[in-house]
Every structure is written in structure tokens, then in C-alpha cells.
Length: 300
Image (cartoon, rainbow, N blue to C red; front, side, top):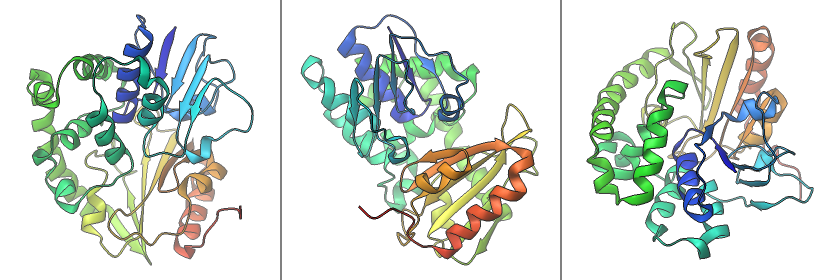
């Protein structure tokens, strides 16, 4: 039995819960959602997928992204919920010995972007927010760190986790990184009507930082678009879309919209990845849909 999940804070907490509930021994398989969508991952019959699109070979599946909903029977649970970790927690709650209510509450808050302006601008004052931002580099070399967080969060309270040497090091780096990221956002973002568009394709390696910071810098925008090349292959472009968490007037379901462009996600946030040859077709269509700001959800 193996856990297959996404390398973000929600995915890490999913792994924490699944490890205790099922007494799994194998290491986590860390996977990005588009790799599942494009069938680029070898999924086994005993794999448990969490915070990822469904795969027909898996034993169990847990998710909360509206664009990933399926209509056929499966083992596991799906809810349109603030976090996938919360879905896993409710399913296996009776098997858990530790009290994870605080961890799940904070994961719900972070993954649903239910943050205050002060939490966005000064994450160093908020332990869980800061910890979540240390998981920003989705390169395979960081797998040891993701696994370390799973182990730490499964055994310790948040203050003990933050006192870990590697976590402290990365937390300090986050604070500096966010200061640099703010400058990059200001210099590489333009407004089209109520849409902020950040284009990092001119960088050899795209700047990274607090994904909510753009909303504090461009309060007129109701939604953000970030465009960059894949760090692993400049033949692929990644577009991330997110509703502003401070100016909540975007009517477009981002996850449903991005299904048309080889992606998906939540109503309020999502991403897509595609070959560079499609950029001139896809990107203007995404921006046009967002500037029109019309509800794209089917009537129930």
C-alpha cells in the first residue's frame, strides 16, 4: 500500500492522516495533478490517491477539487470541501489516536485561502501559514523535506515542528523570498480591467513566493493570472489562476474554466500546463474569459 499525493501543505497533511490511520510503511509518492491527468504516473492497484485527480487503478481516492468530481462508484471519499486533508480526516477519524483537529482546521483555512491581510503580508507571525509557505519548491530534490514534515506533523505540535533546524532555515528563507517576490510582482504584473496578469516567462527560473501577495499589491483585481515556463522543461507553460481573497467579485469558476486548457482546480483557484505551441491560443482565451467575468457554472 502506498500514498500518492501532491507536494503542497494539504498533500502533506493528507499523508500524515493516512499514515496513522492505515499504518503504511512505504514512502509517499509525490505527484503533480497534471501528471495524473496526462497518465504519466504508474499507479498501482493498492495505491491511495489524495488531493489529486482520480485514477481508475487506485485502491482509494480522496479529493475536494470541483473539477475532479466523478460520477462512477469508487472507494474513498469526495467532498467539495476546504481541503482534501479534511476529507481524509473525516473518513478515518475513528482510527486516529492523536488529536488532529487544530491541524485540519488550519489546513482548511490555508488551502481555501481564508486568510487575513496581515497573515498574507506577515506570515512569520502565524506558525501554520509560515510552515505552509516552506513547501513552495516542487522539485524532486525536496522530497526529503516533504517526508520530514509528514513525520514531524504526525508526532509533534506546531511549535516543536517550527523549531526543527531545517524548518527554521526554510522559514527564514521564506521571509526573504517574499520580500524579493514582491518586487518581481510589481515589475512583471499588468492589469487588464479587473485581472492582474503576472508573466514570468522572461526569467530563466520563475520567481517564487507567497501566492497571496499579489492580491494585496493589486487590490483592484478580482482574479490573478500567473504565467511561467515549467522549471523542468521550457517546452511547457504553466498558467495559474486565483480569485482574490480580498476582492471577492470574480464570477468565473477557475477550475471548470481550466478544464478546457488541460488543467483544473477549485472554483477559486486552479492551474493548467500545456505545450508552448498552445500558448498563443490558450492564454488570450483564459484572459478574455476572466475579463468578461461571467458565471460559467452549469445550472443545477
